[in-house]
Image (cartoon, rainbow, N blue to C red; front, side, top):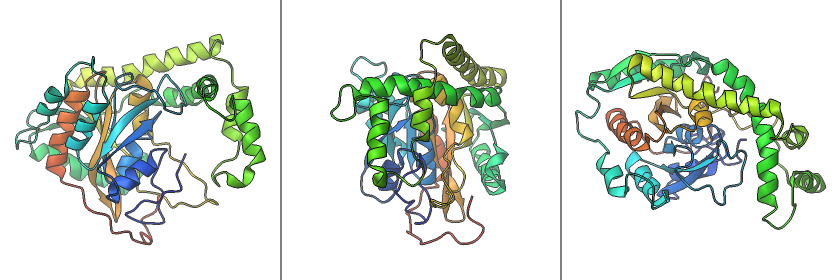
Amino acid sequence: MGSPWLDPYVLDRNPCGSSAGSAAALAASLAQVAIGTETDGSIVCPAGMNGVVGHKPSLGLVSGAGVVPISAEQDTAGPMARNVTDAALTLAVLRPGGAPRPAAALLDGLTRQPGGLRGKRIGLWRLPSLGPEVDALMTRTAEKLRDAGAVLVEVTPPYQERLAQLEYPALLSEFHRDIDAYLATREGPRDLAGLIAFNRAHAAERTCFAGQELFEQALAAPPVTDPGYRAMRAELKDLSRRSLDETMAAHRLDAIAAPANPPAWTTDCARGDNDVIPSSTPAAVAGYPSLSVPAGFVGELPVGLLLMAGDRQDGELLSLGAAVENRLKAWRAPRYLPTAGPGASC
């Protein structure tokens, strides 16, 4: 869900997702690096909206110890920073000692030479539903990458409607299982039912954006032992991986690129909140890595470019992201504006 933190670029705008505080703190120079967590979009969308870098690692590459869960099938911690090099350094620290590619090899792979994009094949998934201004920015981004020698191929990964239908109900069942296991290790409410009762007893402290609806839906969801749930998760895993694998194989791609976010919407309790951005879903559900780097602006509002690659291709993705970052040079310091003005809202 959205955060009470505000986007430091425009102070009435929402910074997107449950790692919004990490991203806003980086943009505001309150930290050099930060750790985000993502189930679907909660690293890469805040990174995009706050004009910083966010890396969602391959599932299992970083320990999930201590992460308040939504779903062990998708949850991961990951590095956030103002540039790709700092994100890679942070990932090198986060990775367990037995993981492949030690820190030196990972950092050696970061390509900042002028020819770093030459010959790279990138699939551009435009997502026009995010608005004409974002689409125009993607066109300009593609032109810059082509000028640097990359080959851009327009793609639309398949199965996205089916993934959208299946993911939410599967996550409800998984949240019930995983939050019960987490709360059993903590003081206070010991399970989801106890958490709902606690929140009802402290209603004045809840966020304005949601009551207990999501928790109640998860409490009533089928258990993870239910055959219907197990079929859903199996189909999700299969289709999400095929959506990326088939697209990359068909066009011989090094990565798929898409807008990471629309221009930040206003933070308004009456309006409600919605941080579901479709570009993050395939990699998040598949457990594949994704990386958001600053692409540019719609007015004063940052937009990120989301890069996705195959399982455990984190080093290659960071290398490509560094070359993209070096070409686009889209980062700029926030100005803490009170409003983006008319026509800049989403």
